[in-house]
Length: 288
Image 1 (cartoon, rainbow, N blue to C red):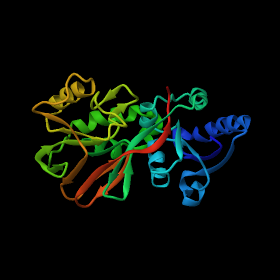
Image 2: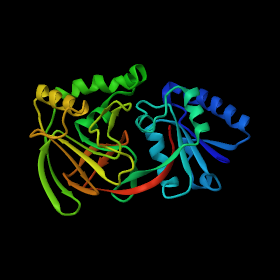
Image 3: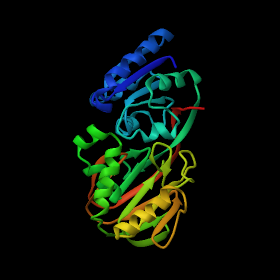
Image 4: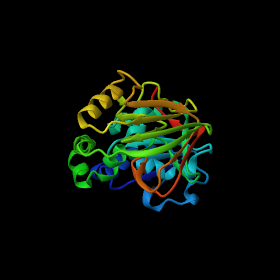
């Protein structure tokens, strides 16, 4: 790590990002490491020239914004978690405590992880969500997130589960296996963790296995939905008549216009959704 670009989301973490940047720059100066710093709102390819490391101070949405600039390059990514969910950081074993997060840089432990590509133009490290998952991410008020942080999603999750809507999806897996399902929730995941690294759509979901994880929940009754969903995230089971868990290298979904999310960022899909995977396309620093 010789030339570093710091990318900060100044509004992340209830505006803790600016404070965290001061701690980080103090560390870099002490180590004699050259750095430049920009806001996530001012991203431009020119900033990514002649650097070997990008350190993001923000959440999963901020990380997603820099993907087009660093995937399939020799640039390494490190995250100082400062967002609402910080799911990728959790998956990489990076703590939310700023001092402990900075200490991991001294370990110099790295790995390569997969990236999802959505409709050939957008990238995802975590997941794409439709239906119930999308409602929670896209419709939870910012005021609620500012007040309760990640637990705002749990509050919203209870409310949205009381008004579940089913939708028909035609799904093609690996270009040959066809599914027609009526579902309340679909999650297409690279990292399936839903809260820190504790709850996940599957214990078999890895960042570097070269496969896409597909989770489909069918039920509409709120009580049955909660029972099924809790059994999934507590890894009591993966599949049943009410839920499906699959692994694939490519997935296409036909369902018309609808609202979804990519790594927590709202996305309006206007037609087919095609997702494939680029194995080990991103270099990252992580905990040992």
